[in-house]
Length: 356
Picture 1 (cartoon, rainbow, N blue to C red):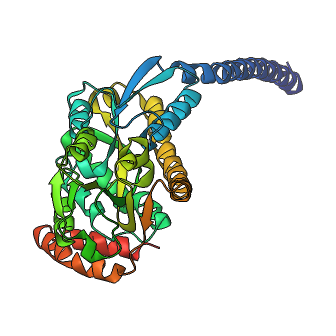
Picture 2: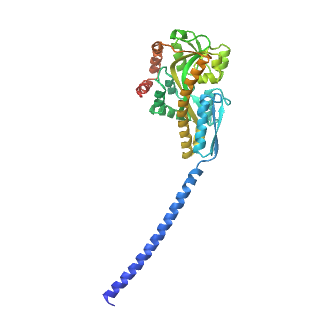
Picture 3: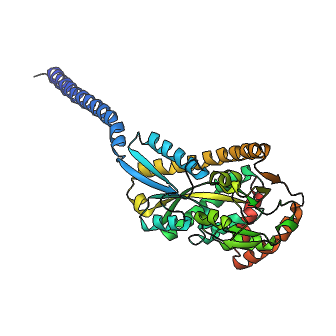
């Protein structure tokens, strides 16, 4: 057989092999494309299936439609939307506990899934939270947002891990305003001897001592009865909160000095958190952050509008002390005392002051 014949046979055989290889290759490619399309089709379903139907129980100490309740309702709405209705949130507004420390303890023990609380009541869990209550620390609401949504806020939330509580986000408890049933507070001198209910932390009490008042730590649920019985003459929740729980009906004098801002914090139990997968955690965390921010913006607008309305209706008498510098000077020993006790606070406060 000639070399040309051999070459022809080889080339024909080679062509057959290549054609077969191409056929196999094409078939494999088709199968790959079909498989890829199949997996792309089922991927969303798998993602959706990752969210388990469950009910989260969330409690706070304030009544329905209070500032905490508005935030909790927004959280429920966002969770429902993001989970496509699979995760339900049941809100207990003031009817599970009237003590924020107890609410936090219930979260820590796993007997309650989540709680919407004020930071001022949680210093037993994270001592550094007290620095947020330092008098005249924040310039305005925008300053508050920048600090709480930034590194300082994230670090404070992270500290809850040591107490076996998952702190998800900051919320809004508002600027504290002093209300009382004795007299208008037109200047620092009017604070002298005024018996005021304070939150259950030392910072709050020390601030009011420095301002000349007589502080009395009382749980949130006992404020109204304490005013009625004369145990205290005043308290320091903001106008919206004080009005929603009935304080202003028996305490018509409101002093708007904005001496300190009280934040809220959204807590979740480790038991709940450990039972959530990555997608569910993201849904809950994102909803808490968004609801907290939304609540802060809503609260400030509502607070100002309500104050003007009640003042116009002569239901409250509002005073705006002009000697603010005297108030700031009076509380400087409080700063010095706590910086001595907690030296690491000073750089944090300096960071807050530098936040623009």
